Length: 104
Image (cartoon, rainbow, N blue to C red):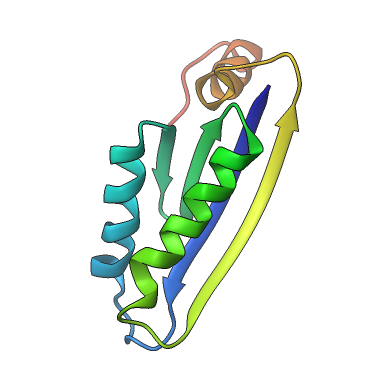
């Protein structure tokens, strides 16, 4: 099974630039071993189990809760049985359809 989770999480009480806080989350995800891609507007992870994806969300919140009074988060799931490697595969499918490489 492939659980793809696109999410954004950041404090809303720390001013305009929150990259130092988001960096804590990215470091945790990187150490977790799950496949991920950082984008300008959020992060996409791919796991095999729902519990693993939800644990990333929980740990992300824990990265911020000590220093932040208000935290914003949005999440989108794409869950598909019988598939893996969709983090890269979905992009490759579009590139095949277009017949060329795209920016990503």
